[in-house]
Length: 545
Image (cartoon, rainbow, N blue to C red; front, side):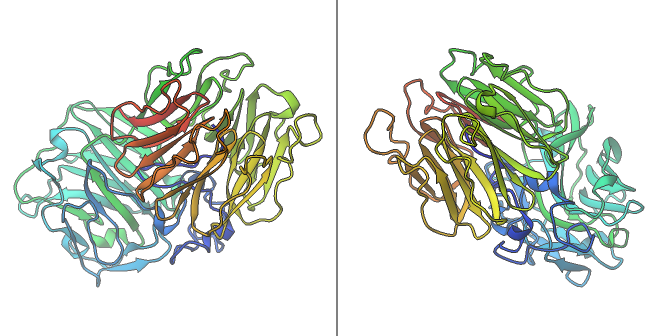
């Protein structure tokens, strides 16, 4: 309920909308001409940036399912905690500073696999489980990649043994613009990714044991193929990055690489709390979801194919979602919804009192947020626009439509009659109704995510801590949603419900506090959650199937 969520997700990644101004504010050498068109802007990354962001502190975080996680930051360290390092041959690669997580590598001169990157031989040893390979269960192999041409073969990550020539239990690659995943040298899933040439993007292969293999690009499923193949492992296998021969990968760039002993995708919805109108009766089949949000008595979700699902009360058509599979971001509040399309345009539906669904035209939007009877959007130039209640269309008028001027905003959030935004310098600005201090924002230049409830707001700082403000006067609507905010520096994503809050920890567990009269602060058991979404008196989350 509430804000723009650009959450995330890829397990621990914090979502922000990144504008051209914001690129230069990343704490490190992140900025760069990402698509080779001679300028740094959002035109070539609209859908990608609406989902991820490029700041250095937004890298993946290890969890219990992480077998190996390599940040290619100059030393080949494995950040999974398993002690598996890469042997990096610096004379065969070049370091690049335009990678999504600040430091990547570029393949260089000819050489054998070991001349690029070679693991120390323990890359697939999971803690407490001995040697675990993709053949013994579900697995995910993923990386951030950049390939410069659709006429070359680009190997990304694979298993190989110098003692068994030509046999790779698995191989993730891009061949002539086609992403491929092989098992035992047999291609079992492929998808055309030629449109992503000269762009950084996230590529993942999900193997479900003796069931199927699916490929995902920027969280969206692009291919799925059933298979009964099981990777055949022989002694002395290592993980290699960079392909069969480095010479076939000149210009290929690789950033983070992660191997997991779980199917990271697709995700399912978990729901708890008040279910009077079916707001906790999530849609079936409950799979392939990548974002979720809750409103008064209905839920809204985005699927990996770009389509929408909604459920719960339908008093004003709020669950009658538009058709199509070109949506990239969602927001909901009260009884209406606002969504962002891949082409940068908007859509809205539901209760349209005071014009909350009369969205402006244009194809230059990067994020959306919904309040009570009003809505707003962040434009790709970093400015904010609002419409609905308060803009002269009728009551209630609390100044929520008087959005701040400027072109340096990177994220937005909407409460009942107030708004909050993050500037490029990571400071906050608030406006609108402020009788509970909900628009009086805390100081600082370290905010990375924001969310608003009815009379309060919640923010995530860069150090992983939380801060909340707004109603805390002991009145009927004060349930401790501000004063009971938990301590700690291990939070990675947030969402505010009507009168309660949800926060996702790095270990995949959920903290919840505030109004709990319907159990909305009692999360379902589990420590594998990847996203949270708060409704008025219910809560939602995403977790792997």
